[in-house]
Length: 505
Image 1 (cartoon, rainbow, N blue to C red):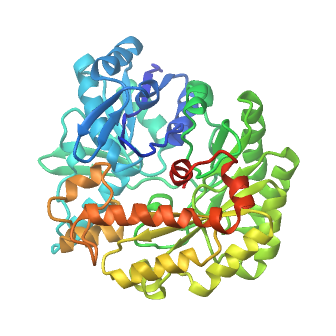
Image 2 (image 1 turned 90 degrees about the vertical axis):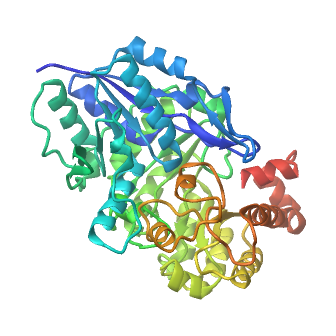
C-alpha cells in the first residue's frame, strides 16, 4: 500500500494586545500523529502560532485584536518544504477558523492536488448547528456549512476521529472509497453534504501515547502561557485521563462532542504517559485537563494513589463540578492533595439558583458551594473558582448577586468570564434565534477574539460591560492580598504586583 506525507496544522491564534493568549500542544494532533506513523505514513505537526509567536499582525486597532503566528509566505514555505500529500487543519475553537481558511488557501496555492481536511471542535459544533437548522424550520441557524463552501477545503472530520482519520488517509492516498468513514463530512452538491455519524471510542486505552516528539516542547515551555491560573513550574505536562461529561450545561459543547458517558483510560495507561514524558522533558508539574475528573471517585482515587508515588505537583485547569461526592469531600480532597494537587478549580458559574436551574441547566445547589471551597482549603489546596456573567435573561441584580456571592465564598482566586455563545450549544442557538447580539456585533464576531457579544441587562454597550467585568476581576482577586497576605504570597510569589496577579487569574 502507498504511504502518505501528512501535514497536521494548528493555525495562527487571535489575541488581545494587552491580554494573555494561551498556547500549548494540540492534543488531537498529538494523538492522530502516532496512529499515522504506526501505519507507515510520514507526519509533521506544524504549529504556525508557536513558530511565529513573536509576529503580531493588527487585525482591528479599535478592538486591540492581533493575529499571532507565521506570515503567509512563511506558512507557504513550511508547506512547500514538507511537500505533503494531505494537509489537515485542527480548529479547536471557532476563533481559529479564519486562520484555518487562510492556511487552506495557501496550501492549495502550493499544491492544488493535496486534499485539505478540517477537524476539531469547531467543525463538529458547526455540523450540530446545521443539523438543528435542517430539523427545525423556525430556526435562524445557517442552512449551509460555511466552512465546506470554501473550495480550498475538501472535507472535514467530526467527533473522536483519531482512528477514522487514519482510515481516511489510507483511502485517499490509495484512491479507495472513503464515503462510509465515520465522522466524514463532505460537500456533494449545491448546499448538500454527506454527513456521517462520528465514532465514539469506548476503550480509551486504544489511544497511543501523545507524539510530543513531533512538537517543539521547549518552545511551549519558554512561552509559558499554560491554561492554569497558577503554575509551580515552567515545565508543564498537560494530560487528559478521561472523556465525556454527564451534565447538560447550556453554554458548554463538551457533552455533545465527547458524550455524556465518562470514559477513563486505565491508571497504567495514564501513568505510562506521565512517567515517560516527565522524564523525557524534565517535567515539573502536571495539568490534568479533564472535564469531569471528580465524577468517578474509584478511577480518581486509583489515579491519586499512582500520582502520589511520582511526587509531581498537579492542578485542575478546567473547572471540576462542585457537588460530586459532596458528602465525601473531606476524604476526596485530602486524597487529591496528598497525591500532589495544590490547586483545585471549581466551576461555580452563578450565585443565583434560578440562573443555575433555569438558564444554565446546571445541577448544582448553591448551598454546596461554600462548604466545598472550605473543605478543599482545609485539605491543603488553593481554590480557584469560575463564574460567568451575562447569560441571556440574567438581570443586572442577579449578576451583582453572583459577584457578592463569589466574593464572600472564601475562594483564593476568581475568573469572572463574559458569557460566550459557543457554536454547538443551546445558548448559541437561543442567541441566534432570538437575535440577542449587541448592535454592531453578531454571528461573525463569534469567530473573533471579542469579549461581549450579546446584550446584557443594565449596560448600554459591550464596552461598558467588558470594563465592568475587568474591574470585577481585579477587585475580587485583590481580596486574598487584603485578607491573608501570607496565603497571597504562597499563591502568587513575593514579588507579584497587581497587574501580574490579575493576568494570572
